[in-house]
Image (cartoon, rainbow, N blue to C red; front, side, top):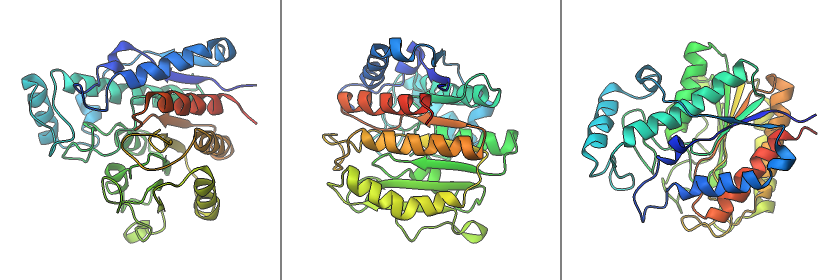
Length: 319
């Protein structure tokens, strides 16, 4: 029997779209929705469309500093300039659009906890570069980090497992919880010496009592499916064996697939099937199936559609 997966689906999410020619635009989500719709007859009984809702200010402040949130509001009203040093332009309504991304992620978390869906997927979620007090790398509010704080503070969960396979290191999540042993982080990405944000190295394993709860796996430019699987089997499985999560979050960035204009990896969507299937199995073994996937990066439309649809299918199908 297949699992029920809630997919955040609505025009509101498409508004998180930077002006042309920025690579993070609404056509990414449109390509995914179109591809998923083509599979509707096969997955119709398993996919539940979840309408996005705006997060509250209180939700955003679980992670972000009030001064930064006020800054985003002002830039959203002005509609010009940048929210960071040049990667993340402001646009009219960017504050409200960001609230919908965070709200969709939190709504999926709550539906999973309530047992109304087994798993969730937010294609615009996974904005993993934003820090507590700043935007970065196309990311305004860090919905993944906000979800982690929600689970820790409001649901009082003892351990969260966050796995990130975006080609870019998820620095906004990784360093924000670096000394928090309740958050186990596994991040597989292109070597930071060759790609933004230039972080995420193997010696970084956490700080203080959290040492050993973080793992960076670096891949060299050109690495493909076999290199990914070899590194995963060599390092990630031992790390996962020590995890006893109450909830699992997967950031399933599609920018590691061959041909992405911003990165230099050479995956196919087989990587996404491999990871999503493994975490799906782990979720049912360890935490009652509580697993949320987030889209993350990916700037080739065909790759995004294939990779994210592969994640959805993997979460529907139980072995």
